[in-house]
Image (cartoon, rainbow, N blue to C red):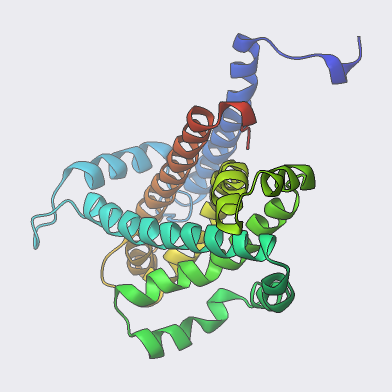
Amino acid sequence: MRLINRKPGRPFALFLLMVPFVLALIAYSVGSDIRLAENPADKLLPAPSKIAATAERLFTEPDKRSGRILLWHDTAISLQRLGLGVMLSALSGLIFGLLIGLLPHLRAMFSGFVAVISMIPPLAILPILFIVFGLGEVSKVVLIVIGITPFLIRDMSQRTLEIPREMIVKAETLGASTATIALRVALPQVLPRLIQSVRLSLGPAWLFLIAAEAIASDLGLGYRIFIVRRYLAMDVILTYVLWITLLAFTLDWLLKKLSQKLFPWTEASL
């Protein structure tokens, strides 16, 4: 039997899933031990036990000045910014993607413009956003919107164009208007793809958020990493990085389950 046709059973699949994580942990532990053996004061690769102790402290001990547990407070602030930016981007991408995909005149006018806009590095215009919107919450949310909306628009418009023409013709034959076709034919087709596209956009969205918080903020996960990096507090930095990774994975998993629940026929697997 060819390897391409072999599928692992559930227990073995779980084992294979864990192998890369275990190997990465072993590699880090070995590297940390080597560096600490040469220099016990080395800060670049703290021991896993030190990272665990730091994580316990950051998750449980309140700040002496504010009385708040900073990690949880930073998490709430960052998730609020991320959620608002992603929701605005998803809504804009859905609306404009449907319009460009369905209406030839709008497609002729805006498809090239959106393609060009999507090539602009969002971080390159971050200083402009700070000048225009200030250093508050608006500029951070706008950076996320500018960063991922063009991709969502292009993806939604392409998915709309892929809708079989027969479906639209049948709707027109039954007397459906353009608005009815958009809401009753196109929208159900592109919604599953929208969730998948948002999942793919979460990585860049986190990147833009962390960059904005690191440059101009006094709260948030990115700000905290930027602050402690001057002290070479790698145990704190790695704790925040692992926490951000866990948050990103959790959001992606929730969106996947949402897609499977709302649109089980798509068998979303991204």
